[in-house]
Length: 408
Image 1 (cartoon, rainbow, N blue to C red):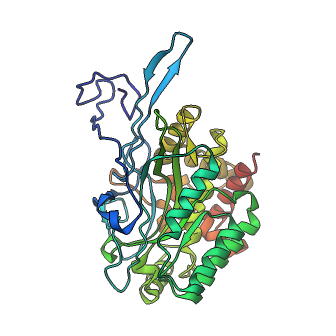
Image 2 (image 1 turned 45 degrees about the vertical axis):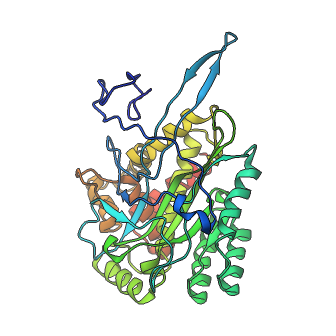
Image 3 (image 1 turned 180 degrees about the vertical axis):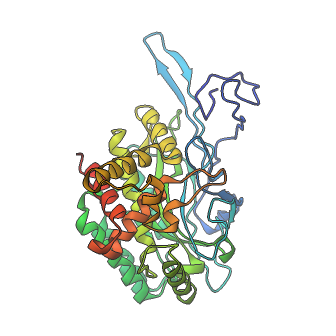
């Protein structure tokens, strides 16, 4: 087996990697899970520890286990076992200004739970499947759609109509906004409309936009989950894996407009969020993470991560690792800052410059390391809200991001 942190070959009974010191935590592959109500007891329902990650820091959601498979090599049929375990999920959360711990305290999430209160959803976003017949993208999309539609039986027709509009207009595979206010859902669609009109090439990569059950104690408003291990094939190698890329909306905010309104107004007025933040615009922040992730995909020459197999597992792992460490994000920020310095001869430091966007653009993890992709997302959020009146830092960073997306 191999170390999930540095890739070093390990003894079968190793508890720690002798090269980097990483703890070895071998977990069993998923069993066969069903999306049916009768089999919900089979769904993994453990609490999730989710928080930020940054350079030299691997943090994330224990729901995410990616297990490699046997790869045949050479005409002598020498079989090499490639066991690549990505033990946690790298998510980017947008925290409420009322949280004193947005600098990366571990939070407990109520995943895999059905509706239990006023501000809750019946939607379960983290069903997983194994042993499924998957031969191409169409099979993967069909499984994601089936999982989504099976949970819509009691959803209002008007919401279903809005969901279908978002799916058809913006290339999102599955949308689950079941309990959301109709007018609120329509305004939320306008966020996607504005962004996708300016960035038409980003269609087709988000698989899910969904409400998720989360408490106010968690203080996260929304989250971008680039990699969710959704299904494995019935092949002997379990390849290909089906990966979902999701935007998650916390029900404690998106089903409670009064709370969301007070949070964004306070956050905007205090400088925690960009000026003029609205109850809809936190989704623009998550889409900023999404565009940053797509720029990384271009950098690693990955055209899609919907299906992962032996042909793309290594660049996929590099992409996933970089998203947590923030190297590519920092590279884009440095490029933008260098451009700004050439144009203005500024005496500001990089961190002072980033701080002109919002306080949240300087978010840190538990170890005190900056989370550079938050700077990217806040820049995008700022430009989305304020256009030419956004901070100069935001405009320069978004210009670099746009150039990376266009392949320049």
